[in-house]
Length: 478
Image (cartoon, rainbow, N blue to C red; front, top):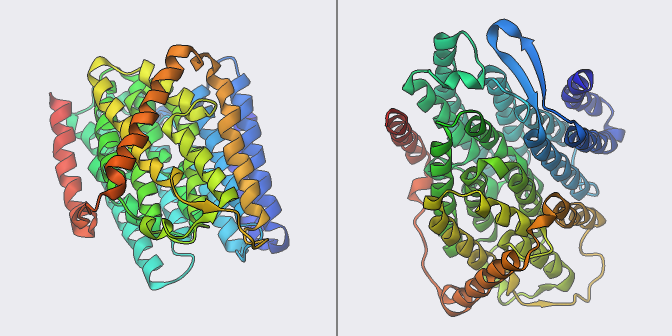
């Protein structure tokens, strides 16, 4: 298994450059890499015990592959495969597919890292590949959004790197376990870097503009898997060190409420999905022990929703009320919206039930509010007008193949937690959904509240990092 892991980890970077040199086969090679990733993830689930690989013994550079890694790796494989199929009939160059594959490989690397220095390298490669994908259209706006993302990301990673050095100074090891016994400032700096990279709490307010202004397939990759590269290490550390768990859970609750608070009032489809991503990342952190399963369901559903949003006649919800969408697209939209709302028969239901069962008492009320807010948010999609289109061939076949993978995955993933299907577990989500739909139809559908965007400006994003550093440092000291 060790040799297979090394080959699997290196394959995307090798083939990333090969497919650039063989442009006639770039789509097939890129899709093949994702199939290898899916196969490796399934092998991880069959592995009886976690696999640990020591790369540099004296420095604590370690790879850890277990069931938690398996969920995240499988998410990355399915989302990337869906994005490649979505782009199949579109005019994307070999350079685009090369960056997709390199991004896929570097995201996979973060899901098996158990030390801060190899994680740093993987996160930096992710930043570069994401920047190149965001700026792929070469328009003035895409270049600005990409540079903004890169600047925020690199600033956060400077903080992170200083924290990693302080951990090494304390233990002569970069291993995650080194957080125990490290200076408070080391933990605060590392947490700040990961909170920004993962789009967590107010550190994640860079995310709505970046994800909403990127091209549709890039938005699906960013929200489906890329932000989880910052979230995964937080989950891993929470499971390894009990003193880290309360901090991670706190940021999970705060993130879930902040994201859904913005999403409920947002009138732009892609910005609403981006704010929802922030909120759903909070659900992953709120119950770290089951974060892997929630990450899988969220990655599938959010990628599907971004791809669907890309084929809607408008991004404005008010305009969509007067522009009926094709019934087939609406059905796909409803399935995805049902899953993220926690409707039975889709894996979003099992993920929410499992998360609820692993919450601490102080988290329950806040997370129930966040769940209700999620239902209200996606009622905007469910209650859109629709009609059967008279024009054939408007949507390319690649879109529907992507939906087969993502929406089919939401159904198949029920197998991971079929025990959720008890009468009590089914009734509560249905009541929550009914209340959310009622609140939307009676109150929020007519709402004209527009939340300010000042906090998303570049100078404020950097300022918020300083405030977050103070908050995390105070939490560590307490």
